[in-house]
Length: 76
Image 1 (spheres, helix red, strand yellow):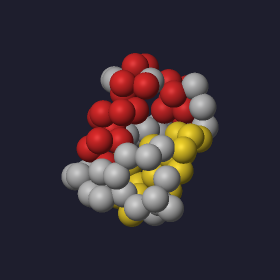
Image 2: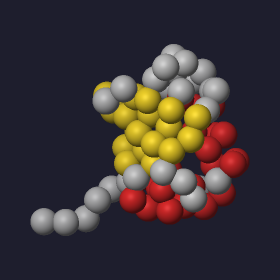
Image 3: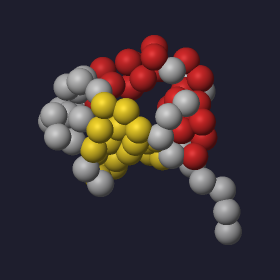
Image 4: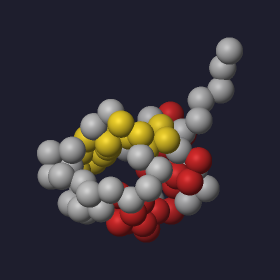
């Protein structure tokens, strides 16, 4: 699956995008923090979209899925 990072999440991960193999969203969250410790304080506040739909709970991730990690944005 493709994981895309935006704004502060991209900065913390050190990349805009990466390929992952996790099959559950909770496992992906744990693996991202393990691989990118700077995400520890950011990821819990992020909206996580799987194929364009927000998911706050654990869901299955299909191999062709796109997961977007979107931190809260400030603005008016």
